[in-house]
Length: 122
Image (cartoon, rainbow, N blue to C red; front, top):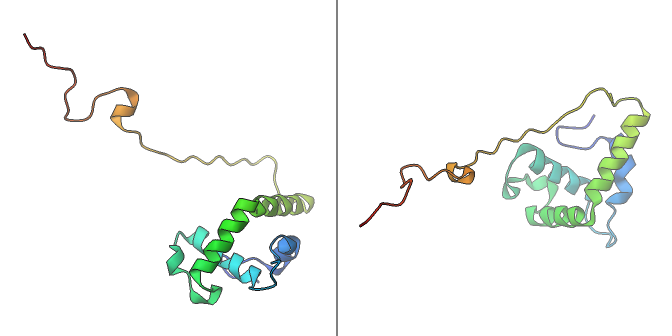
């Protein structure tokens, strides 16, 4: 059984070829687990446990995989696998609702405590 923030053996077999290194160095599965730990836990890259390797190397691999579209391909494969197994309920939908507070000035109002109109001078 996979630990928290780590890929299971079954999931890894589905996406392993996406993360193979052409240079033949490093351990892509371990580094992917490190990426997942940072992204899912919200920790800083520098606070990543040493067992995943140097944080800077894991971060560089993350950026490379992100820029190459590897994560998009991984999600597509895993989604297809779950759909084939009947584990996706198409009646259930999720909408990400991120709330961002806008300033008063963004809607055309003046800044709080500031002048609301120019003073009239004669």
